[in-house]
Amino acid sequence: MTFSTHISVIICTHNPRPNYLSRVLQALDSQTLSKESWELLLIDNASEKILSKEIDISWHPNSRHIREEQLGLTPARLKGIKESVAEVLVFVDDDNILDTDYLEAALKISKDYPFIGAWGGKIRPEFEEVPPDWTKPYWPLLALRNFDKDQWSNLIHQNNTTPCGAGLCVRKIVAEKYVDLVSQDSRRANLDRRGNLLTSCGDTDLAFTACDIGLGTGQFISLGLTHLIPANRVQEEYLLKLVQGIAYSGTILAALWGKYPNQACRSQKIFQSYTRLRMPSRNRHFYDASEEGKNLALKEIAKW
Image 1 (cartoon, rainbow, N blue to C red):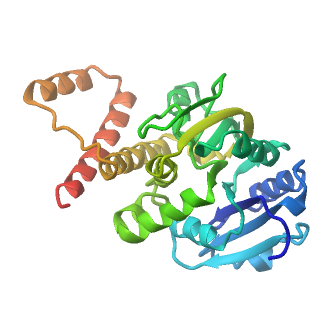
Image 2 (tube, rainbow, N blue to C red; image 1 turned 30 degrees about the vertical axis):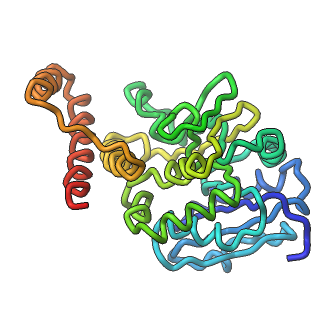
Image 3 (cartoon, one colour; image 1 turned 60 degrees about the vertical axis):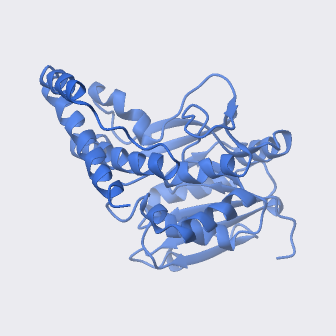
Protein backbone atom coordinates (compact mmCIF):
# COMPACT_ATOMS: atom_id res chain seq x y z
CA MET A 1 0.00 0.00 0.00
CA THR A 2 1.24 3.48 -0.88
CA PHE A 3 -0.79 5.65 1.50
CA SER A 4 0.61 6.88 4.81
CA THR A 5 -1.01 4.68 7.45
CA HIS A 6 -0.52 5.32 11.15
CA ILE A 7 -3.21 3.01 12.53
CA SER A 8 -4.72 -0.30 11.43
CA VAL A 9 -8.25 -0.80 12.77
CA ILE A 10 -9.02 -4.52 12.97
CA ILE A 11 -12.59 -5.76 13.45
CA CYS A 12 -12.81 -9.51 14.11
CA THR A 13 -16.35 -10.80 13.74
CA HIS A 14 -18.26 -14.06 13.55
CA ASN A 15 -21.93 -13.99 12.50
CA PRO A 16 -22.35 -10.37 13.67
CA ARG A 17 -25.65 -8.69 14.48
CA PRO A 18 -26.18 -6.42 11.45
CA ASN A 19 -27.57 -3.51 13.48
CA TYR A 20 -24.64 -3.64 15.90
CA LEU A 21 -21.96 -3.86 13.22
CA SER A 22 -23.64 -1.03 11.32
CA ARG A 23 -23.29 1.23 14.36
CA VAL A 24 -19.67 0.15 14.82
CA LEU A 25 -18.88 1.17 11.24
CA GLN A 26 -20.83 4.43 11.53
CA ALA A 27 -18.72 5.38 14.55
CA LEU A 28 -15.55 4.63 12.59
CA ASP A 29 -16.82 6.68 9.65
CA SER A 30 -17.21 9.62 12.07
CA GLN A 31 -13.67 9.52 13.47
CA THR A 32 -11.86 12.84 13.67
CA LEU A 33 -8.64 11.21 12.43
CA SER A 34 -8.39 11.52 8.65
CA LYS A 35 -9.21 8.28 6.84
CA GLU A 36 -5.97 8.67 4.90
CA SER A 37 -4.16 8.08 8.21
CA TRP A 38 -5.65 4.67 9.02
CA GLU A 39 -6.76 1.48 7.36
CA LEU A 40 -9.80 -0.66 8.10
CA LEU A 41 -9.62 -4.47 8.11
CA LEU A 42 -12.84 -6.43 8.56
CA ILE A 43 -11.89 -9.99 9.48
CA ASP A 44 -14.75 -12.35 8.67
CA ASN A 45 -14.15 -15.27 11.03
CA ALA A 46 -15.97 -18.17 9.36
CA SER A 47 -19.34 -16.42 9.36
CA GLU A 48 -22.24 -18.37 7.85
CA LYS A 49 -22.75 -15.56 5.34
CA ILE A 50 -19.77 -14.17 3.45
CA LEU A 51 -19.52 -10.70 4.93
CA SER A 52 -17.81 -9.18 1.90
CA LYS A 53 -21.13 -9.72 0.12
CA GLU A 54 -23.19 -8.39 3.02
CA ILE A 55 -21.25 -5.46 4.52
CA ASP A 56 -20.25 -2.35 2.58
CA ILE A 57 -16.99 -0.76 3.72
CA SER A 58 -16.26 1.04 0.46
CA TRP A 59 -16.83 4.36 2.26
CA HIS A 60 -13.31 3.94 3.59
CA PRO A 61 -10.58 4.41 0.95
CA ASN A 62 -8.15 2.10 2.78
CA SER A 63 -10.45 -0.80 3.67
CA ARG A 64 -10.26 -4.53 3.08
CA HIS A 65 -12.49 -7.54 3.64
CA ILE A 66 -10.46 -10.53 4.85
CA ARG A 67 -11.81 -14.04 5.41
CA GLU A 68 -10.40 -16.36 8.11
CA GLU A 69 -11.84 -19.87 7.91
CA GLN A 70 -10.40 -21.19 11.19
CA LEU A 71 -13.02 -20.50 13.82
CA GLY A 72 -11.85 -18.58 16.86
CA LEU A 73 -11.05 -15.06 17.96
CA THR A 74 -7.33 -15.82 18.23
CA PRO A 75 -6.99 -17.03 14.60
CA ALA A 76 -8.95 -13.95 13.51
CA ARG A 77 -6.67 -11.64 15.49
CA LEU A 78 -3.57 -13.35 14.10
CA LYS A 79 -4.92 -12.87 10.57
CA GLY A 80 -5.51 -9.19 11.24
CA ILE A 81 -2.03 -8.72 12.66
CA LYS A 82 -0.41 -10.38 9.66
CA GLU A 83 -2.47 -8.34 7.17
CA SER A 84 -2.04 -4.97 8.92
CA VAL A 85 0.46 -2.38 7.69
CA ALA A 86 0.51 0.26 10.45
CA GLU A 87 2.74 0.63 13.49
CA VAL A 88 -0.26 0.85 15.83
CA LEU A 89 -3.13 -1.66 15.76
CA VAL A 90 -6.56 -0.97 17.26
CA PHE A 91 -8.81 -3.99 17.80
CA VAL A 92 -12.49 -3.07 17.66
CA ASP A 93 -15.10 -5.70 18.51
CA ASP A 94 -18.26 -5.90 16.42
CA ASP A 95 -20.21 -4.34 19.31
CA ASN A 96 -17.84 -1.45 20.15
CA ILE A 97 -18.93 2.12 19.41
CA LEU A 98 -15.78 4.24 19.52
CA ASP A 99 -15.94 7.85 20.65
CA THR A 100 -15.37 10.11 17.65
CA ASP A 101 -11.85 11.04 18.75
CA TYR A 102 -10.77 7.51 19.75
CA LEU A 103 -8.30 6.93 16.92
CA GLU A 104 -6.87 10.42 17.23
CA ALA A 105 -6.37 9.90 20.99
CA ALA A 106 -4.88 6.43 20.44
CA LEU A 107 -2.35 7.87 18.00
CA LYS A 108 -1.43 10.69 20.40
CA ILE A 109 -0.84 8.19 23.22
CA SER A 110 1.41 6.13 20.95
CA LYS A 111 3.57 9.22 20.40
CA ASP A 112 3.46 10.66 23.92
CA TYR A 113 4.10 7.34 25.69
CA PRO A 114 6.69 5.44 23.62
CA PHE A 115 7.32 3.11 26.57
CA ILE A 116 3.72 1.79 26.48
CA GLY A 117 3.16 -1.21 24.21
CA ALA A 118 -0.53 -1.99 24.84
CA TRP A 119 -3.23 0.38 26.06
CA GLY A 120 -6.97 0.93 26.28
CA GLY A 121 -9.58 3.19 27.79
CA LYS A 122 -12.91 3.58 29.52
CA ILE A 123 -15.73 1.28 28.39
CA ARG A 124 -19.35 2.22 29.03
CA PRO A 125 -22.30 -0.17 28.68
CA GLU A 126 -25.35 0.24 26.51
CA PHE A 127 -27.74 -2.52 27.51
CA GLU A 128 -30.36 -3.77 25.09
CA GLU A 129 -32.61 -4.29 28.10
CA VAL A 130 -32.23 -2.89 31.61
CA PRO A 131 -30.43 -5.64 33.56
CA PRO A 132 -31.53 -6.69 37.06
CA ASP A 133 -29.59 -5.19 39.96
CA TRP A 134 -28.10 -8.53 41.02
CA THR A 135 -25.99 -8.60 37.83
CA LYS A 136 -23.98 -5.46 38.69
CA PRO A 137 -21.11 -7.29 40.44
CA TYR A 138 -20.56 -9.22 37.19
CA TRP A 139 -20.52 -6.24 34.82
CA PRO A 140 -16.69 -6.02 34.80
CA LEU A 141 -16.72 -9.49 33.22
CA LEU A 142 -18.59 -7.92 30.27
CA ALA A 143 -15.53 -5.84 29.33
CA LEU A 144 -16.63 -2.67 31.14
CA ARG A 145 -14.01 -0.32 32.54
CA ASN A 146 -14.30 2.89 34.58
CA PHE A 147 -11.46 4.82 36.19
CA ASP A 148 -10.65 8.46 36.92
CA LYS A 149 -6.94 8.79 36.08
CA ASP A 150 -4.36 7.50 33.63
CA GLN A 151 -2.44 4.50 34.88
CA TRP A 152 0.36 2.35 33.51
CA SER A 153 2.90 -0.27 34.55
CA ASN A 154 5.59 -2.48 33.06
CA LEU A 155 4.69 -5.41 35.33
CA ILE A 156 2.73 -8.48 34.24
CA HIS A 157 -0.45 -9.38 36.22
CA GLN A 158 -1.28 -5.70 36.94
CA ASN A 159 -5.02 -5.84 36.32
CA ASN A 160 -5.57 -2.11 36.86
CA THR A 161 -3.29 -1.23 33.93
CA THR A 162 -4.04 -4.14 31.61
CA PRO A 163 -6.50 -3.20 28.82
CA CYS A 164 -9.16 -5.61 27.63
CA GLY A 165 -9.90 -6.56 24.04
CA ALA A 166 -12.56 -3.91 23.41
CA GLY A 167 -10.68 -1.03 21.79
CA LEU A 168 -7.31 -2.64 22.54
CA CYS A 169 -4.38 -0.65 21.10
CA VAL A 170 -1.03 -2.37 20.58
CA ARG A 171 2.19 -1.55 18.80
CA LYS A 172 2.93 -3.73 15.79
CA ILE A 173 6.16 -4.96 17.38
CA VAL A 174 4.14 -6.27 20.34
CA ALA A 175 1.60 -7.92 18.07
CA GLU A 176 4.31 -9.58 15.99
CA LYS A 177 5.96 -10.95 19.15
CA TYR A 178 2.54 -12.30 20.19
CA VAL A 179 2.21 -14.06 16.81
CA ASP A 180 5.55 -15.74 17.50
CA LEU A 181 4.45 -16.84 20.99
CA VAL A 182 1.23 -18.38 19.68
CA SER A 183 3.04 -20.16 16.85
CA GLN A 184 5.44 -21.70 19.38
CA ASP A 185 2.80 -22.67 21.95
CA SER A 186 -0.57 -23.98 20.78
CA ARG A 187 -2.02 -23.60 24.29
CA ARG A 188 -2.25 -19.85 23.71
CA ALA A 189 -4.46 -20.33 20.65
CA ASN A 190 -7.23 -21.80 22.81
CA LEU A 191 -7.50 -18.93 25.28
CA ASP A 192 -10.20 -16.92 23.54
CA ARG A 193 -13.71 -17.20 22.10
CA ARG A 194 -14.49 -19.98 19.64
CA GLY A 195 -18.07 -20.06 18.45
CA ASN A 196 -20.23 -20.48 21.56
CA LEU A 197 -17.30 -21.24 23.90
CA LEU A 198 -16.80 -18.46 26.44
CA THR A 199 -13.09 -18.94 27.00
CA SER A 200 -11.19 -15.68 27.14
CA CYS A 201 -7.91 -13.93 28.08
CA GLY A 202 -6.33 -13.91 24.62
CA ASP A 203 -6.46 -10.12 24.78
CA THR A 204 -4.68 -10.16 28.14
CA ASP A 205 -2.06 -12.52 26.73
CA LEU A 206 -1.49 -10.05 23.91
CA ALA A 207 -1.24 -7.13 26.34
CA PHE A 208 1.18 -8.97 28.64
CA THR A 209 3.45 -9.49 25.63
CA ALA A 210 4.24 -5.77 25.77
CA CYS A 211 5.90 -6.30 29.16
CA ASP A 212 7.74 -9.32 27.80
CA ILE A 213 9.62 -7.11 25.32
CA GLY A 214 10.38 -4.33 27.79
CA LEU A 215 7.36 -2.08 27.29
CA GLY A 216 4.33 -1.49 29.50
CA THR A 217 0.54 -1.56 29.58
CA GLY A 218 -1.78 1.32 30.37
CA GLN A 219 -5.30 2.68 30.52
CA PHE A 220 -6.13 6.28 29.60
CA ILE A 221 -9.16 8.46 30.29
CA SER A 222 -8.83 10.15 26.87
CA LEU A 223 -9.98 6.89 25.26
CA GLY A 224 -13.64 5.94 25.48
CA LEU A 225 -16.13 3.64 23.81
CA THR A 226 -19.59 2.21 24.29
CA HIS A 227 -20.04 -1.56 24.53
CA LEU A 228 -23.36 -2.77 23.15
CA ILE A 229 -24.65 -5.59 25.36
CA PRO A 230 -27.54 -7.77 24.15
CA ALA A 231 -30.20 -8.97 26.56
CA ASN A 232 -28.98 -12.58 26.73
CA ARG A 233 -25.60 -11.53 28.14
CA VAL A 234 -27.08 -10.39 31.43
CA GLN A 235 -29.09 -13.55 31.96
CA GLU A 236 -27.96 -15.93 34.68
CA GLU A 237 -27.28 -18.86 32.34
CA TYR A 238 -24.91 -16.82 30.18
CA LEU A 239 -23.15 -15.19 33.12
CA LEU A 240 -22.55 -18.57 34.77
CA LYS A 241 -20.90 -19.87 31.59
CA LEU A 242 -18.91 -16.66 31.35
CA VAL A 243 -17.65 -16.95 34.93
CA GLN A 244 -16.59 -20.54 34.33
CA GLY A 245 -14.86 -19.67 31.05
CA ILE A 246 -12.97 -16.72 32.53
CA ALA A 247 -11.91 -18.74 35.59
CA TYR A 248 -10.60 -21.49 33.32
CA SER A 249 -8.81 -19.16 30.92
CA GLY A 250 -7.45 -16.92 33.64
CA THR A 251 -5.87 -19.88 35.44
CA ILE A 252 -4.30 -21.13 32.20
CA LEU A 253 -3.03 -17.65 31.33
CA ALA A 254 -1.48 -17.12 34.75
CA ALA A 255 0.38 -20.42 34.45
CA LEU A 256 1.62 -19.55 30.95
CA TRP A 257 3.12 -16.38 32.41
CA GLY A 258 4.79 -18.18 35.33
CA LYS A 259 2.15 -17.71 38.03
CA TYR A 260 1.25 -21.29 38.86
CA PRO A 261 -1.77 -21.74 41.16
CA ASN A 262 -1.20 -23.01 44.68
CA GLN A 263 -3.17 -26.00 45.88
CA ALA A 264 -5.37 -25.16 48.86
CA CYS A 265 -4.39 -26.87 52.08
CA ARG A 266 -6.89 -28.85 54.16
CA SER A 267 -7.77 -25.95 56.47
CA GLN A 268 -8.33 -23.64 53.50
CA LYS A 269 -10.62 -26.19 51.87
CA ILE A 270 -12.65 -26.51 55.06
CA PHE A 271 -12.99 -22.73 55.32
CA GLN A 272 -13.98 -22.47 51.64
CA SER A 273 -16.63 -25.16 52.09
CA TYR A 274 -18.01 -23.39 55.15
CA THR A 275 -18.07 -20.03 53.33
CA ARG A 276 -19.81 -21.60 50.33
CA LEU A 277 -22.58 -23.08 52.50
CA ARG A 278 -23.34 -19.66 53.98
CA MET A 279 -23.73 -18.03 50.56
CA PRO A 280 -27.14 -17.17 49.09
CA SER A 281 -28.20 -19.72 46.47
CA ARG A 282 -27.35 -17.60 43.41
CA ASN A 283 -23.94 -16.59 44.80
CA ARG A 284 -23.21 -20.26 45.45
CA HIS A 285 -23.98 -21.11 41.83
CA PHE A 286 -21.50 -18.51 40.63
CA TYR A 287 -18.90 -19.67 43.13
CA ASP A 288 -19.30 -23.24 41.89
CA ALA A 289 -19.00 -22.12 38.25
CA SER A 290 -15.75 -20.32 39.04
CA GLU A 291 -14.36 -23.31 40.93
CA GLU A 292 -15.33 -25.67 38.12
CA GLY A 293 -13.45 -23.49 35.62
CA LYS A 294 -10.36 -23.35 37.83
CA ASN A 295 -10.42 -27.12 38.45
CA LEU A 296 -10.69 -27.85 34.73
CA ALA A 297 -7.67 -25.64 34.17
CA LEU A 298 -5.70 -27.29 37.00
CA LYS A 299 -6.29 -30.72 35.47
CA GLU A 300 -4.99 -29.44 32.16
CA ILE A 301 -1.98 -27.73 33.72
CA ALA A 302 -1.10 -30.96 35.53
CA LYS A 303 -0.57 -32.61 32.12
CA TRP A 304 2.00 -30.03 30.97
